[in-house]
Amino acid sequence: MWIPSRIVEELANIQILEIFIDNIDDEISGPIIRSMLKISTKTVYFHLKGFEKKGYITFTKKTGRTSYYKLNLQNEDMIEIVKAENLRIITELKHGLEEIEKKETASGIRVDFLKPLFSMSISRNNPFNSVFKGSAA
Image 1 (tube, rainbow, N blue to C red):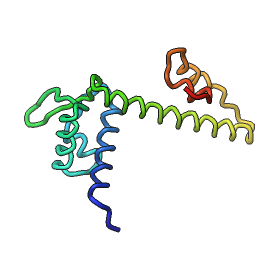
Image 2: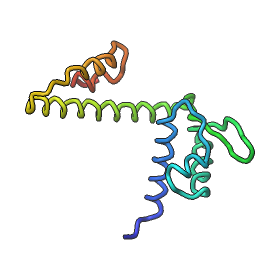
Image 3: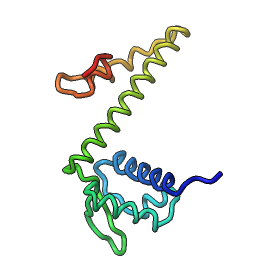
Image 4: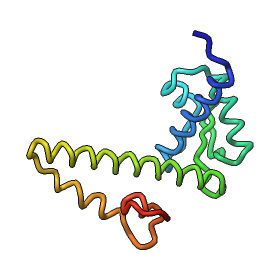
């Protein structure tokens, strides 16, 4: 099946950003991304340069010929992307907990020990509270 190159490029964009978000405090190089995603070096550096130009990532160091980059948490667009990704993860966790509770009810197995993990995430100033409470923000 033929897939338009624009879709392939966007998928690589998303996957590379996810690597940076999942490793938010780490310096990441092109070879690391290439080996994780199994894409060409040219594709990796094409996207890294684009992210650097947008200010999503910043160059941190060069070791030999390898350049390292880190997520730029000073960039407002990147902050919003990270918030959205965190919200997506929290929503998936909440849905997963609901599914576990349904199975718990059906099977009689208790998983109450998981609930404190979610309640620790809820605080007065947490913008994601509405996800847990089921109310609109």
